[in-house]
Image 1 (cartoon, one colour):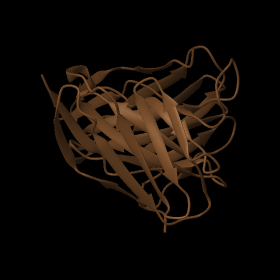
Image 2 (cartoon, helix red, strand yellow):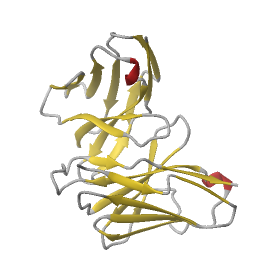
Image 3 (cartoon, chains in turn red, green):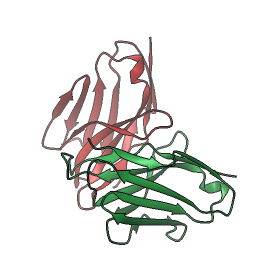
Image 4 (tube, chains in turn blue, orange):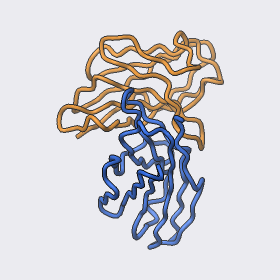
Length: 112
Length: 119
C-alpha cells in the first residue's frame, strides 16, 4: 500500500533521445509526487513535482505526466544530454505524515 | 534559496566510537527535518522524522538508542551514531521541509550527504 514502484531499473539513450521513467502507486492518500535527480556521492535534488489534480506539468526539458485513474506517473526528459546521466527517483508524499516514499530509482546513461 | 548543508561530508571512525552529523537549513527555517540512509545503488530509506523542540519519530526497525536525533533549533538537526560498527557504514542524508523564506511546504530539500565509514 505504501510502495511506489519505479521502472526501468536502468536506461541507456543516445543524446537527444527522450528517456521515460515510470512510477506506479496504490495509496490514494498520496497527494504530492516529486521527482529527484541524484549524482554519485551527492544528495538528491528536486527536479519537478506534481499534484494529483493536474495531468501534466512541464519545466524546461522535464515533463511529468500523471494518470490519476491508473495511479501512474512518469517523467520525460526532452532532448537528453550526457549531463543528464544520473539516478532519478520518483516519490510520493503521504499527506497525513508528510513523509516521502521513494521508488527504487532509475540509473540513466545518456551517450554522446 | 532552500540550501541545506551537512557536516562533515565524510567521516572515518573506529568501531565503538560515536559520530555526530549536523544538518543545517541555511536560508530558511525548518520545523521538520528528515534523516535518510542510502546504501550503494539503492534508494533512500527514511530513518526518522525530526520536529523542532520535540522527540524524533523513528521508522520501524530503526534503533532510537543507536541513532540519536536532536532538533534543537529551526535550522539545525543532528544525528549521532552511537557505538558505531562497520555495518553502520553508509551514506546519510538529511532533508528539511520548506515553509518559510520562499520555500514550499510541499517540498523536502536535501543536504549533500555524509559518507560514514566505520573501520
